[in-house]
Length: 372
Image (cartoon, rainbow, N blue to C red; front, side, top):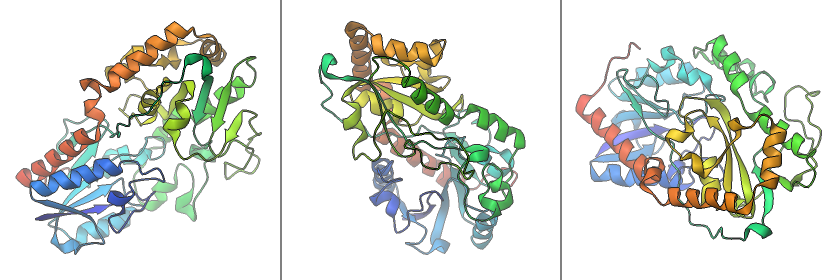
């Protein structure tokens, strides 16, 4: 068996094969996808483990899920195991980690596996979709019994006012430059302007002004607590907060007509997280903003496109006043989509198949020259 040593994401460091047992995050994101990949890779002669479970010197492939915290950490690993093939898999948002898309950083790896379809014709660049686990939920609550809208998100700040980590490298935005990774200041400004955390906050605040709108908030950061390193950063409590912690997002969303499914980043890099799919699986109708080419992947009949409204007030009034028949058409279109072949590229099974393809390419071609 050919060993693939995996370095889990530095934001959620799951060693002792934890990415297969717990996935990423408390919810266990990607757990099933990585397990399927592991099972199918074994059938073609690859053994997948986090780097602490097997001697790294035996590894044919060093697989990094996002960049390491410091460039030095990666370069030391690369120098210590010079014959191993290095792979960078990007699954983090451009807003949270813009430096991962810097060409000089990517050239240090033999292969880059990314959801960003731009530039995949470059040597060693391979495209994939972030995976979702299809869940069946009894989301058939009658329209009349559902509340209007919910949002299930933490209230966060990213960019210059984001919560900083320890040391100079923990500075918001530019901290990665002090970790040795290349970063473009222009990208920081673009990403800051394209971030959607502020849009979520404005939407929740505007919802307080719409009479007759049942708009409920679930998540941390909405009760007035500090969400920035800057103590004077405004965060007045939101009156629509219902509950901070919930165990099952889909179950909660199933009780609402609409669910706010804003990504944390607006752009055209192919970053489509689970939010829109969670809403559809819940039997709710997603209100979407994020990937500009979303209709290339999800039929426009399945969701409310926030871009089509003149203002947030117009959007919120529409969500309050949407007729049952119109809502039902969107909901039914979503259910048809989730049962169709169109969803398959985003499934855990498709992810596993794609990653096995990547391993076969590596096995066939070995290391490639990216200029690193």
